[in-house]
Structures are given as C-alpha cells and as structure tokens.
Length: 335
Image 1 (spheres, rainbow, N blue to C red):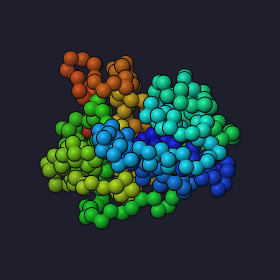
Image 2 (cartoon, helix red, strand yellow; image 1 turned 45 degrees about the vertical axis):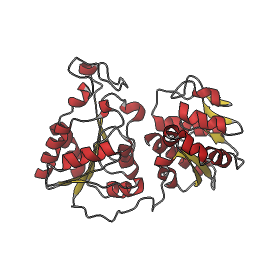
Image 3 (cartoon, helix red, strand yellow; image 1 turned 180 degrees about the vertical axis):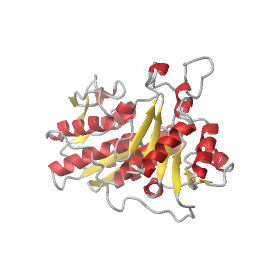
C-alpha cells in the first residue's frame, strides 16, 4: 500500500508538465482504491496475485488470467512505466506488450526485476522512495524532475465519512504492520491509551485482516476510551484519519495515509529506514532506532537478532516507550 502512495506525487508532477495527461494503473485488487484518489487516473486494472496463487485452478476456470491479460494489452500508450520495480510487478510488465520503462539492475527494489524492462533507468537508491518514483517518471516521460516538495495531488472528495458512531475527539492508532518486527508490544499500546485518556481523548484502532481485527478488539476491550473499528474501505479510513486529532503508527501503509491527509502523526521506525521510506508530508514526525545502541538498525529483517531475548518483536521497537511517543505526539497536536 505504501508503495502505491509513494507513486502519487509522480503523477502530480507529470500532470503539471503535461496538462490533461491520463494514466491507466494496474494494481492489486486489495488496494485498488488508492489510484482512484488521483484525478489523472482514468482506468484501473485489478490484478490478484494472492488469490490467483492460492486458488489457481478456480481462477483459471473462471478465465480470470486471460481476461486480465486482454485488458492489460487492450490500449496503446505513449509510455508504460513499472513504478514498483519488484518481482511481482515485473511479471505484470512481462505480460504487457511494448517497451516498459523501469529501473536498472543497480536501482530496482528486487532482483531480477530489471530484466522485464526495455528502457532501464538508473535511480539513486540513497533517496526517499517518493523521490525515486518522481525521478523515474521524469526520465520515462522526458522532463526535469521538479525541485518542489512532493504533492500527492488528490481529489477533494477522495475520502468518505463512514456511517459509524465515533467518540470525539479521537486519535487514530495504526497498530498493524506486515512484519512482526515492525509491531509495537501490546502492553505499550495499553499504556499509551491510558496516557491519552488523561487528556480527554478517545482512540480508534483499525482492523484489516482477521489477526489485526482480533488485536484491535483485544486492545480496545481493556479501555473505556478505545474503539475497535469494523472492516472499512481505505477511502473510509482516510475519512476517519482526516478528522482525527492525531495518529500513532507503526511502519505500515496506513501511516502513509496520515501523511497524505496531513494529520499530525508519530510513526515508529525500528528495522526500517525513515530516510528511505518514512512518512512524508505535513505534520509527519518519527521515532527511529538509528542510534549507537542499535547499530543493526535499519536491518530490514523479519526476525530480530539483537539478543537472545528477542526473536519475534524487535528490541529497537521495544525501546520506544509510550511516554516518549505520547509526549512527542501531544506536543505536535498542541502546536
């Protein structure tokens, strides 16, 4: 999800350089709402990597693959760009007829994705993912990358207010993450929510998959000022975040959604790098473990090897105390 949001400013750049430009976007069905938020996106073609892999015969019988292939190749384009530059996206690039622009072997996110690209561009890895995307689009579409700050350029009505009762004022807590090493311990969330209550704030915890929903419900059940949200669309979550006083986040896609809407947010970075993939936008603040105590950070590992005491959750994530996080967020909300 975060990778998709990182690409949005590149579309804004191109729209400024070429007024009226339109994009068709191939995206996993789980995140198909993200491209719909940008006014330059015309058509959205949905892939289903996970479902196709898990139910290959059923998908084949329904002719989903052939339908997707024909849709992918139905139109002619002035340029075809693989913005993600990983193995999964490169497979889609191989299915598309025509010359695809992507990053070269020294720039791709995952090897050997570069093999799928006819037009290969060197894009410095030592810069934020948003700037890498902006540079790739500039190279592929033949213009100079603007020096301006990244602009997500979303539609005014991109987000939806869900029809659920919410106790205000509230904070949004993005407690989920794709890796266990990115998670904050549950007892820390309990302590954080107790601190927030003293300032008269309630908190909302999103679900997601079944495990994340159960965690949200488990945490919320211990606090009178906490509410576990039902299953909501990304656009509905965007509406909730947009109206929050602030947000406390693990390194997850929803953290980048706080950046898009400009809600004051503190995001925790232990095994990953703020400089390369951190939330970027108005009112974005970070706690990161890149200090002498954790020379291994950022390690980008799904298992923590800091000591024998840690093999699932990260030692560096445990170093961010609830007091530390709340003091920082409270200061930014007040300002």
